[in-house]
Length: 495
Image (cartoon, rainbow, N blue to C red; front, side, top):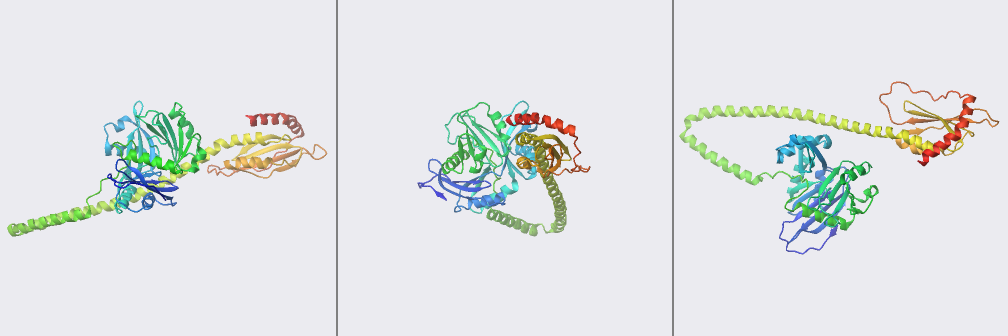
């Protein structure tokens, strides 16, 4: 825990910012007379496997409960840039716009639009399309977090993704650019125009190298002051250029100070998910209900004395009033049945998403592993070995080579270390002496690379490992071409 000195006499309402990431929990308390300043900051490791409401509660409980306005920066929230046809959102504002964008975002976030809490800010657009920077979360989680903080006298003001802060952190006030690496997304922030900074979300993890071309394309013109900010030190390996890490105490303090300035300003430029206003307190509702009941009693008493002849009519109306409750029970049962069906559909959709990711990863390996195999053969084949045949059947690759010795040290090990990450494993070679020399050579060596990736569409049996006999003329021709093969392989390796 880090404690900072603070002068008393604060006149502004205190503010608490909670930072929740997959690896850490941070609570920062701000107070101030002229402006909000950091008073105390606590930090702890985030427990694994917990839900967002539990993590937010744990972050708030790092310090003593207090009455304050709370903003939550949660890296687990879904954030993205949506591009939608202008006709779909024409004339929509507020809750109507959020509902429309919830349906557009469902395909990427997986959040049910009927359980969606979404905030959006315009992000420009081109032609007939409009772009919105949105942050989305489950409405059930938002309500649970609001209730949990309310029990501790805190007021949840809003929730946002911690990435994409549209303010300079450790830069000059003009002419700056920043790339932020978070665990699941890459954020681009362009402050080259101080009056209208802009942000962009690259929806890929930093560990995947595909984000760099998208970042360069979005920024366009190069600036010498572009820096990279990482959520924690484990992401530094994927960055280059000047680095700022939120693991550094001074960087974290400066970053949080900029966040509280933006969130409490006249107009925040960030998509901030805000909870609905709290309902009337229980005490007031009980008092109001009691007053209404008393008034109803007085009216009923007056009717009893002055309108007794209407008793039978009231009894009949009472019977009719019970009919809606029976209809409501029927509708409730139907709603529960539909909810069960919806839960099953969501589980099926999750299974389909997992299957789609599996095939995406499998195809990625399949697209690259043949090129990797050829490059490895070019780099690892020794001069006294000539690869004369490469064949593939049902995911198994057969390598046939000629060598003047029965063993080729290091060759199989080099090939195995290169291709195993791509789903191949190499088996020990089969040797056959061709007896064209007094020592029994040359030798024909056959290696088999078996695929560890299952092919559910395979119906034909894989071929055997037997190798057709090689004629002496073919061997002499292959031996004469061995030098040329080696030269070609060295050329591939150099390239």
